Length: 106
Image 1 (cartoon, helix red, strand yellow):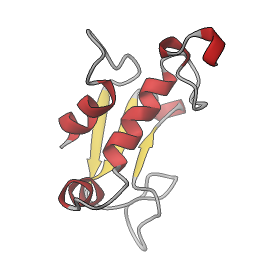
Image 2 (spheres, helix red, strand yellow; image 1 turned 135 degrees about the vertical axis):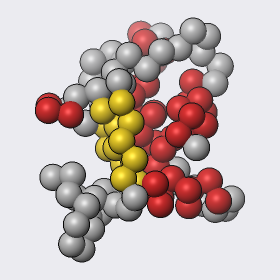
Image 3 (cartoon, rainbow, N blue to C red; image 1 turned 90 degrees about the vertical axis):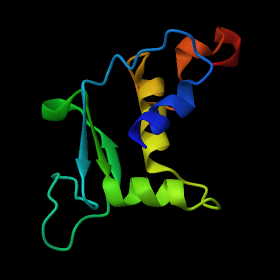
Image 4 (cartoon, rainbow, N blue to C red; image 1 turned 120 degrees about the vertical axis):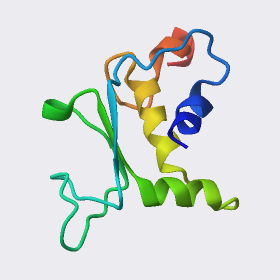
């Protein structure tokens, strides 16, 4: 499911590499912004980290499975996080993946 999530955003890009990703951590359930999984759990289902966890993606295994099982759902945390990495290729996660858009469209 992680590989499918990684493939969907870049399916037609030849020789694509996720240059800002070295590791994917799979947590059993959601977590909080301090990456804690204990207690009430958190409201975070996936995250592309920066700072101390730069180049690391964290995903909720429960949410990842649910997204692929739910055929009518419109959200997929895994795909969503990999899209952030496509966007981050130009250095910023700002919603504008400049490398795939012509300047006139930016």
